[in-house]
Amino acid sequence: MKAALNTVVAMHYTLTDDSGEVLDSSTGRDPLAYLHGHSNIIPGLEQALEGKEAGYKSKVTVAPGEGYGEKNPEAVFEAPREHFPPEMTLAVGERVYADGPNGRISFVIVELTDTGAVLDANHPLAGKTLHFDVEIIEVRAATTEELEHGHVHGPGGHDH
Ligand code: ZN
Image (cartoon, rainbow, N blue to C red; front, side, top):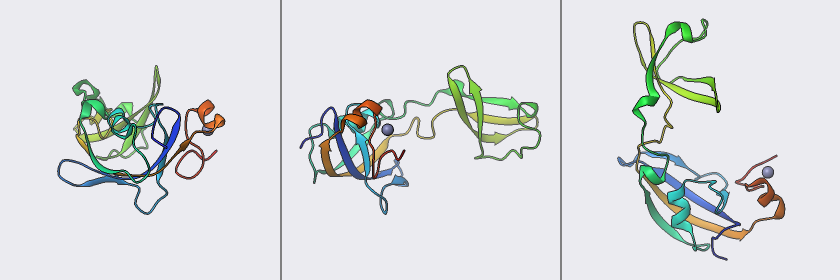
């Protein structure tokens, strides 16, 4: 079976950045399973797997525009100390959350300043060219329930 709309694709992958550093990998875990054609994974990778079958192995390079988007400089800003919970210890790399008009927003502290901290709301992989080593393990038809939920159930997918 070929990867197409409403199929479930199970794959092993290793994701590296431009410097070759491994950012994520399914090695040692179940293959990642996703519902093809439903934007469950980034567009650049989904397009590269379209029409491919079990056993397909390839390197796929995804530009930021087809991945997690470009970094938005306006999403990096300084927040004063009083905007954080008083008991919180501010540290670079710490993740903080706030409720925005469209749900919860996640920020990471990128710098400490004299009066607070600089926050970055960009996705950690925004602005990065992504290099995937992928191997398709299985392609199967999605179940009715999976199509209703818009995601995969079972190993490598949602467990609920
Ligand atoms: Zn579900």
